[in-house]
Image (cartoon, rainbow, N blue to C red; front, side, top):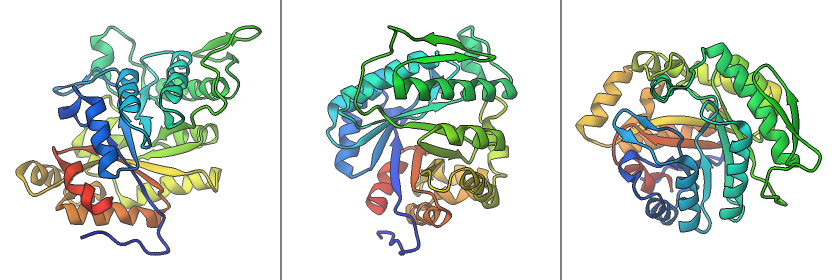
Length: 308
């Protein structure tokens, strides 16, 4: 069954996040996703999550760019806690060049406490994380627009001016994409970016790890409220959403769906046709892009013929 859109629904783009089983072959996976008809592909920025050992986000995204010709590519999301926003911009400008203009620069606040502690880096509390993120977005935006930045903040002091520039110098720098879940993040990040992504499960990672119990309590009203907050700030900015999906008819999918109970996010777990319909319904909320991260193996494969 191919899900049909009505004239009242937004035309949705679907971006797929590289699954852990394919981390050893980003280029091959990217080419397969392009051939399967997906709108975009994503490289994530972790050292590890559970038993998945991640490739470096910029290296993986470059392999994806070199192996494909037309599919969009994004970072989902570069972790602001891992590096300076200056290095982030240098990386994404290089990726925009390597992809011939197909890259979108996604920067996130960072959330995984275990990674930070394991590598000996400071893991800030939530208030500091969002403050650092807002400052980093201001710096990144200025660097992308002008290749220079002078900024004095609580967390960053940047002076790239005069003869100094960040390169490569491009006629068309990549669009800047932000991720936000809470009211402050939405309020202060939305004006700084070209696209905003609603993180529906933000409450479940605010403590530094994934809390499935909290994830199960997310409601559709919360998602609607987040979209309304964005629209109060910007009436025309494109809005995406990050979702963990589990599509199939196997025990792993059944367990994930059971863990979500009657929560809204459980709609994106279950039989592939049901999940596809729930995804398409997001267009009615004003969503224009959905980022799909597998919560159960082979979910992308099961959804591809229904969404593409």
